[in-house]
Amino acid sequence: MVIIRSNPYNPEKEALVTNKDNTTCKKYTGGYGIAIDIGTTTIAASLFSLDSRKYCGNITETNIQTKYGADVMMRIMNANMGKASLLHNIIITQTEDIIERLSNGICAMDKVAQMAVTGNTTMCHLFLDKDLSGMAGTPFKPAYTGSASLKGSENGFKKFPDIDIYVMPGIEAHTGADAVSVICSQKLYQTDKVQLAVDIGTNAEIILNNKGNLFACSAAAGPAFEGKGVQCGTRAGNGAINGIKINRLAGNIVLDVIDTSNNTNSSPGQNIQDMLILKGICGSGLVDAIAELLKTGVLKTDGYLISKEEALQNGINPSIAERIHKNNEGNYFVFYGKNDFNNKQLCDNRQHDILITQKDIRNIQLAKAAIQAATEILLKTAGITLNDIDEVKIAGVFGKFIHPKQAVLIGLYPDTGNIEFTGNSAGNGAAQALFDQSFRDLALKYSRETTHIELANEKSFQDKFLNAMDLKKW
Image 1 (cartoon, rainbow, N blue to C red):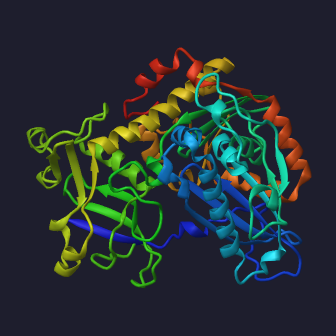
Image 2 (cartoon, one colour):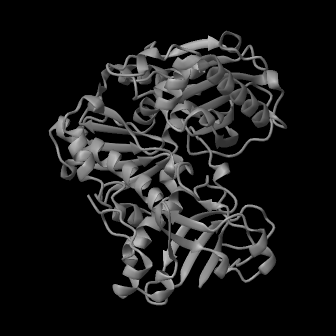
Image 3 (tube, helix red, strand yellow):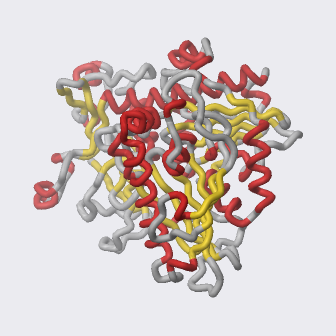
């Protein structure tokens, strides 16, 4: 039996804020500014009144460049094969479209006067139309260092030619402005603390502050947690499963589904069986899926999803075992399929079963192992251990909405007992840079003073990566 519960949370309304007062503005007479975080998979932008510093709205959507590769190396390859101008034009067109939609109903387009940009090094290069040939292989070398300031017209903007653009500085080739944004917005430079921050995205930026000595690296986590690279993956939005529970004794499954359509008139936790078409599983739901399958015993810590026959032999509830199937690519587990529909018409109209495959699980393992191995490298470089850490900060929009105990169970991040979820810290850094010159100065300072660790040059990384593949606590 499957129970579908409503979760009215709307992730699209998560705001980037510069202070505690994030009251939404309606209209102001002064100028407006845009803070934008250009991620490999997702773009998040917010509009602010420059005079009042009030938040006016935001848009989060998939980076259209994803059609030219799910990760930065594919973007770099495409850029170096003659598609650099195309990729630049795509991001400029999408950025201008986002600004236009954000300002609609709030202000005239010519009132949007400033923009602060953050993102990984590759995304910043593509935004600024910089040469990526030095980023294709070791030794990785960016085409520029420091920050960039220019007019929209100088960067190919047609709708907003007079906008003043500021692009935050990065640290090194694959550890970019987004890492600097996290450092500065979260004050990861305090001399009396040991702090660890993990910004979970397609590239996971990992930052370690050892009492004022900063170390940073970037690990290729992949886009699985942002709804890409898994069969039923989807972005967090209406119809996305963002929470999963499996009752091992009864065999029941509870799916929490984001309901933003207002068509069901549902309240939090209300059973909305057959009232909402499920689109897939978003990042937090994937973490739950892996954790719950581990608890039931159908998933082993090495990532192997057992067969239905093996499950029955091991005494697993038949209602759970019957959800395991096999195809040419291996075993898969169905959380919601044709046998779970009460409404035949809805069953006939559904697009697909909601399931997780052996390949999906492997992609989650790769992301988890990359983050853990990279963290271990930073700790070793700094000469400290997890026990020395005073604060752990999990950044990124996805990171804010995962269930901590489930994430710790599968080993996505360490079980230190002092974890803070900070939301889109990179985007918040861009918002602060929009208003504050001293913040920009701070960003430039720590972009230069942070020690960058290039994982490709670390001989122990591969061994640590392989050792971290198991789905278990650190």
